[in-house]
Structures are given as C-alpha cells and as structure tokens.
Image (cartoon, rainbow, N blue to C red; front, side, top):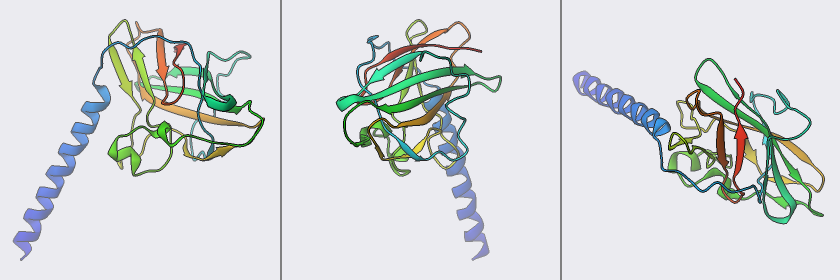
Length: 193
C-alpha cells in the first residue's frame, strides 16, 4: 500500500510541475497585433485590495490613459512601472462619473477557467506590444489567482477605487503598449523603468 501511495504522490508531483510549466508558458506567449483604439469604457471597484501595490505610487496629475466604460464608469491609468524582477505593474483607479451606483461587470475577469475560480478581478486584462507583435496576459500566483485587484463589486457615484494589474514585462524596446480590459475601450500607455 505504501508503494501505491508513493507512486500516486510521484504522479501528482509530476502533474503539478507540468501544470506550473504550462501556466508560465501561457503567460509568456505572444499574440497577434490588436487595433489601437482610444479608451471609451471603464471597469470596476474593489473591496479587497490585499497586499497589492498602491495605485497612488508613481501617480502624476494627469492619467497616462483613461479607458471608458458604460454609464460613466472610467478606468484611469496612473502609472506603468517595470521592475528589475521582470514584472510590469499597472496602477490606476476606477472612477464612477455616473449619477448612480454601478455594478462592475463580471466580464472584467475574462473567461479562463483558472481565473474564474477566484472571483471577480481584472484577470481578463491584456497588454499588447504592437511593435513586437506580442500579447501579455495577467500574471498568476502558484494557486492560479490573478495578480490584480480582486473582490470587485460595486462603485458609488463619485467614488474612486485604486486598482493594480501585474504583467510579465515586455522588452525594453517596448515603451508604448496598449492596455485592453474587457468591456472598456483600449488605451495606450507609456512604460517607465
């Protein structure tokens, strides 16, 4: 019986290692070019910010981009900073310019099975490097949770909610990239190092 248990444990470890390798491979995969559009829609709010980087870090007076959503919902991008570890953190805030409370769209999390398991987030966001012809997907932790603000639900009129999204860093030659968030317009942002 202990031999069976050892064999099962070995199989599980191999399967887990393969799944982790595939997940890392998918994150680094490139996609085709996308249409560059100006922002016209926006996204959601967050109750649970956890240990996420502050959306205020590196913020300037004017947002780098403003993605517009339905009913007065805006996603204002305040910074896109690349760190030495090979990550790109995009900070911003959701803002409700509408006259009433808005429910943030569940489509923000995308449609990947692994991300869907972890609730509402910005897991459906992508970053497009048109020059390099690559698309970057939101990074995930070892449990498959997206490295973004989570727990997005509603946002009251006039309210702002800080958010962040982490991606693999594009090459240094990619200084301008397009951020795409489901249900929002696209926006071009400048990366700072």
